[in-house]
Image (cartoon, rainbow, N blue to C red; front, side):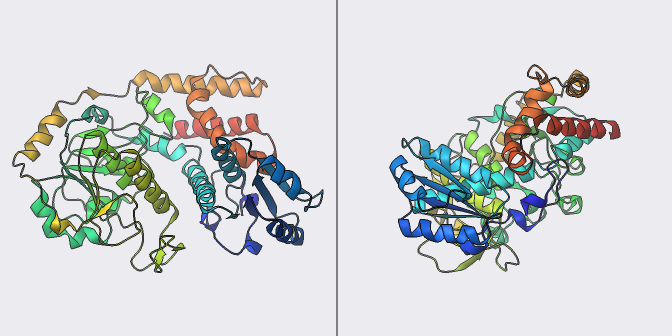
Length: 461
């Protein structure tokens, strides 16, 4: 469990991150949203059985809180969250989720609120996982990356207005639609990434990868090395070395210090997976409709992370994992936010997606675009080139050393240091709920450890 993890060392994580809907008796935090009196009394009894391990979060109007708190003992482990205004709900649910990060969480109440707090809880765990080594692996990939000119992928904005785009993941529907993809290749842009690159039977128009630890051997099976390749700076340096075509750089959305090292300040929020990343690119390029294939977001023969699909029309047991559940939410929210585009689910299976039309790929046809490959070529070659400015790395090292010295002298005013702005403060914003809960306020020791790790990584490079 989270309490056994040291917040000052890279973490090896296990089932403590899994999404749990277990019986309340096995959970550590119970969130009661506008509960009835009976539920509070039951929760009080549950909490007293293992007082040191169990916690209650009570949410309701100020009047409800005042009444219901009286049913809990004075020394009960409980946090009360009075809701004074409708706008407070989002902040309160986020706070509860983050306070319970890397603990089991059960929520009861209005289904929409329950879904929301569990979503925040899942996201919090994944964000901590993504920075569990304080950004050392992404930094190592950046340092080891071949120094070459890059193309700024952001300049592709609105470059393919109303051109259909098919987003290709590695799920079962990819190979099932082999013939249809060949038929549609001169009608729609094909964007393929991650493990699907080793399985796709034809060259896509755009390839992509973002995983910092993706297996090199799998990537070597990709047969079309000259394809324009979309990436973020976290990408495995070994896999980056296999890019022989144009390298299309997109900014980070999490490890923002890498953007600064690349000499760029923009952010690019590409979601939770390679398919959400490529979907965001297709949307940015103006593509319409946007079609999903091979992004089932679940296993056909599952071995882990059992999850009962919450779609009321389905009683089927669906096996999935945390990041895919977040990707599903991202797809649904993104489609909802952009109703001007047509969103098509051509997977014929997988986790259901609200807001998507379900149409088999074989039933889709679009105007023929015989010059589509040439058009992609021309667009790519018109993109601005850039190289990461070499002086940024030296500035970064100097800032690391200055901050290390200031912390050793007990100085807390670090706000003007670029390392604080781009690395330390973002990491603290992510980690402080966990560290404060487990160890109390330990900001400077945390900063000191992160600085030491980054200086060590720089020395090893």
